[in-house]
View 1 (cartoon, rainbow, N blue to C red):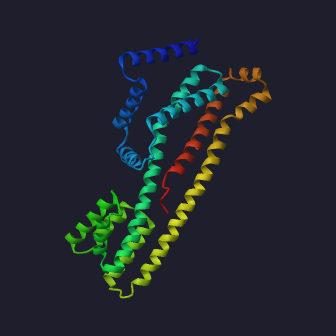
View 2: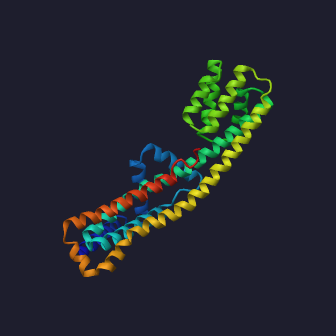
View 3: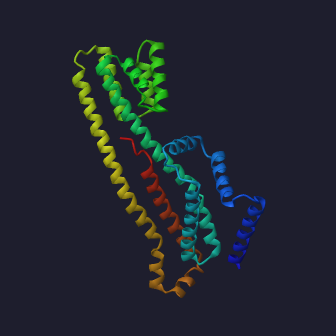
Length: 299
């Protein structure tokens, strides 16, 4: 009975959308509606990282988002039905799974943005050192990087802010403090600390120290990219294992027999236990996905 009601409701929704948009493509209307909803209710941070992902050509299309919605809903409904043999619980878990799609989209965009920022940080530190070898002035080095066209926003705007701070205050201290707080990266902090020492102590032999800093940056970048490869391999295995855990219930049903398993579902504590299994497994799966997508460029 419930499945018939659900199917009829879905058909009525589709008919309403189609009739309301006569002469238009209903698929485009749905995709546009989803996009507008994201823009209206998404947090500012999501809008920033999503815009950058779009610029880099790595943001999912509306068709891919809709595909994720369908995939998550179908898989969650199937898993829930395997556990409870209930259409109601299948619908509830399908809706809950679909609600995770915007969060996973945010994590993916954040990963793209984090990788982009790290690459910009790498360009910033490397080019400032190269410019300093020519200008022998930290502020002039910043100006050289600013005018070189190798950086993009937000780092480019922040470098302009650093330069203005340095001229306004007559020192580089506040400018460096501003940059360190905004980009908490090991290579930025160490490079800035080195330039503070050179500027205040008047070191005449800075070439060797800067060369050592350049080598440290190269080694760090290599280790970060190697870590990305290791993370990607681990992530594939982790997700495969996490999804497989949901289907261990099939083994339980095979051992007990389908009839015996259905009788067990009549006990409230068995149902609670099964919900706990799904929720705990989902928690660890989402935690692993979150770890994979966050701080991919941090040391």
